[in-house]
Image (tube, rainbow, N blue to C red; front, side):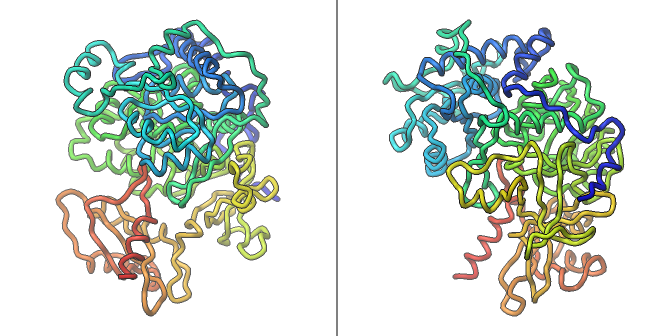
Amino acid sequence: MTHPWLKNYEEGVPTEAEIPEIALYEILDRSAAKYPQNIAVSFMGAGITYPRLAELANSFAAALAGMGVKKGDRVAIHLPNCPQFLIAYFGTLKLGAIIVPCNPLYVEREMVSQLNNSGAEVIITLSRFYPLIAKIRTNTKLRHIIVTNIKEFFPGKLKVLFTLFKEKKDGHRVEVSKDGATHLLPDLLKKYSGGKAPAVTIDPAEDLAVFMYTGGTTGVPKGAMLTHRNLLGNACQTKTWFTQMREGKEVILTVLPLFHSYAMTTCLNLGIMTGATLILLPQFILKDVLDTIQSQKPTLFPGVPTMYVAINNYPEINKYDLTSISACISGAAGLPLEVQIKFEELSGGKLVEGYGLSEASPVTHANPIAGKRKPGSIGLPFPSTLAKVVSLEDESDLPVGEVGELAVKGPQVMKGYWQNDEETAQMLRGEWLFTGDMAKMDEDGYFYIVDRKKDMIIAGGYNIYPREVEEVLYTHPKVQEVVVASVPDAHRGETVKAYCVLKEGEEATPEEIIEFCKDKMAKYKLPTQVEFRTVLPKSMIGKILRRVLVEEERNKAKQ
């Protein structure tokens, strides 16, 4: 197997990433010792230093031990981006327990399903979500509920204002049960102040750190079992890619949700490992993000295309100074070239497309930051990562330029799905992770995602990849966002439908959009239907949910 991508690594990127043989939680302890003055977390204008964060994590670990939590037990973290997430994250890891990150937007059914599948016996949740957790507790294995208020790490004045004007109105002020199984986080941190977890031995390659539930765009969630080495390894690989990264000096805008593997690696683990400051924002509110960039001058901004699209199209964007941003890696969906060019003009920094999946901790590919980038490409395999394109028929390796399924291999690849041998066998074959994405590789070793196997449209016997059509539509001057999906067709079996969000103040007709495409793609790929929408369905991290639209069309066809 040849590795043509290696010759295109930018100067300073090694072929293999150095991964220390340590437990994941040790990155916090090391940075606390190395950068005692550095702010680890900036939240709502208040900062927490590295040594203080380590102390709080130790107290949390001691509190968990006091509840009987031991190595291998599961602890659910049901929080938005806030300091409490990091305290619970590192505290849980220090015990050798396994983190189960939960999406705060999940409803009752989804929470019960994930908690029961994981076997979590302890959960830390926001006071706002406490009524939901209290309600479902008897339907799960939960023994303890830890409740925290979002305001606990606000600076003084803001905390007072929040208490007076927002806490009750927004549902953050709740009465918690005094049954002995429900605990307030401030009480625990005070009770176990100065405490530490019992010493445990961690085998980084074998011991599990996180059950990362996948399925946000693919269906029923499955728990990808990620080891300490998987997550630490991916953070180390990412660090090698940022050749200009200055240890102890970077400021990472952390608006991607930490419960998702993308932020867990590119913000949390990478940031803490390198002594960076994480600016935590609980959600992507455009004005808040721009104000934060203006005032706090982040240097790194991992995101998703919809975030960069929103910034590019903000009517008053020229009033903001984005030039502190030196590098951004965009993931979760394809990065349209138009979006990349505009954002780089605004910031002066580099915005590169990467690729990953939760089962790989998640990053496996990225375009070089300062080296040769190819539009439409997910870039090159990371150091210590192998990748190949294989035939759907017999899994044989395909030559350059041919489309098949992307398979990857490296230290970041999961051990399997929790209690799901059947799905594990589908994804893992030997040491290779079969991604379910259709891809091709060029002669320089750059990979291109053509589309998900499941998203491919077969119209009249022709294979049509939605992303290719979307790339063309993104060049239309009136189009802000677009997604292409399959809809039933009586003659062709399936046909192409485009869902477009127009830029503010613009108007267009379906005929105009279709006409625009005619000289830019083969006739069989042309959208036959166009629907204009004000918004597109998105996941928590801003990934456009194509499957929601496909389901809508199928339901219409049944009526």
